[in-house]
Figure (spheres, rainbow, N blue to C red):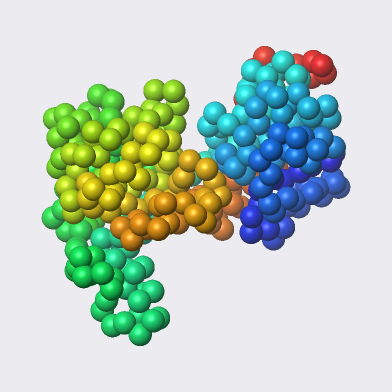
Length: 331
């Protein structure tokens, strides 16, 4: 088969042990992202199978219809709305889903929380410029960092990642306050944590507020400008989940007004993030380039399953097909 691996910005897949699973196939790795429908169609038209790195490229109906040779989409991790499953099914394109792990995104979330609370990045950058113990040359931003012990961690979304974050918080002496579905709040209480009395109280009481929700029609834009306006001027909003959980433009407007006081972000509405993004010019924002799952062990896990699904599909034995109504040769 002719196989394309998309959006491997760091050319990391070439060195993975699991690449041996694709031996004997013609494999092309793309290290850059193309956005336009026409350009994507030209780039991908020759291939029988596409291996996607999470949601870096969206495959909608218009694009899939222009890929006559495509038989298989192999997803690293879980699908998350970036592939038109119905269109793929109608066109006879199988979608194989992989597995995920909460460990790397949970650890990155905690790293961002600690870095933001102690102002590690600005301190380190200013030290390189010869400035000792200086968080900012702006006196208003040159305040001290804070410890996490005794401060309240708000977690919206108490799934696998949220539960790991709560465990880290317990080790650091942080009270945990959970918001989300009733089952999430009940689970948090059963685990010895707190559940917010209301959505308003959740945003008002959190010193650090971390989002861990799946993105879907119900959660898109679920964090509103009114929510952000309730946060403390010293609070940190952390988002390693999906940028689209926050109402468009709400955070960019809220931060200059001081509520919340800070943000630590790993996800953005458009990725790769443009160099002229307003978020990158805000001194109260700690931004990382979507590193949640970008880590050696995670890549080995995600791609091992994605490549194995390709090999199994070729052999006619793949049992991880996500679209149950898929029928080969539908077009």
